[in-house]
Amino acid sequence: MSEDKLAGRFFDAAIGLLERVRDEEAANIAAAGAAIADTVAAGGRLFAFGAGHSSLAAQDVVYRAGGLALMNLLAVPGVVGVDVMPATLGSALERVDGLAGAVLDSSPARAGDVLVVVSLSGRNALPVEMAMNARALGLKVIGVTSAAYATETKSRHASGTYLKDHCDIVLDSKIAVGDAELTAEGVAAPFAPASTVVTSALMQATMAAAAGELAERGIEPPLLRSGNVDGGHEWNGRVMAEYADRIFYRR
Image (tube, rainbow, N blue to C red):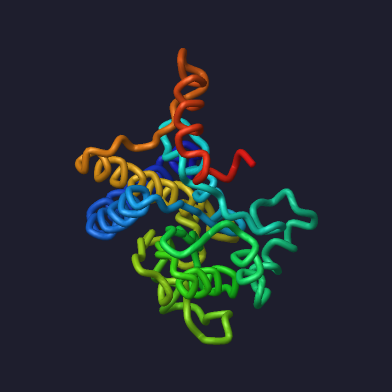
């Protein structure tokens, strides 16, 4: 099979998944957007967490053009990306019991805030405990995960539960176990993961829903503009000054 045909097959697979989450998760996306709008309107703060490659979707909604200025990254040292050496350490840390509690206890998160937990498998101790501990602290938890893992894999948390079991709202990415969309003759392993594309789209769709919900309530969504357009820096400075007590990536 030619390389261009494989590339086309990947686009087709990704588009198919995007259409599925658009249609099948519409109600959950709307609910997540409303929950975020409720929190913004009530003076609460927004946080996003993800480990490994799931952190990419969390980072994609933090401090970016067109995004909500109030979304903060809840970072766990060593699991945010592949920059940790060795990279396998990040995967190992996801399975450490108690790490999530320590992170939350030292974070600015408090009752009434929203935490979005992104984990494709939702089976490791870190995302499970992050959701459990956040809810115990009084946060509303939105989970972005693949529900398939909860039926086709075994939980790695002592409780035997998954991320989806500890969330107020769940967004299912529909990604198949293994996160590889393609197979081909001569290629020993399945390849071409689509989880980042789909999960990031779910995150951005939720942010869009939240912005629309705020506007319908007569509240100007605290959005950032690109710093590469005229007036962008001035706009962002005004928004960050107005919401300084709810933005933590500047401190």
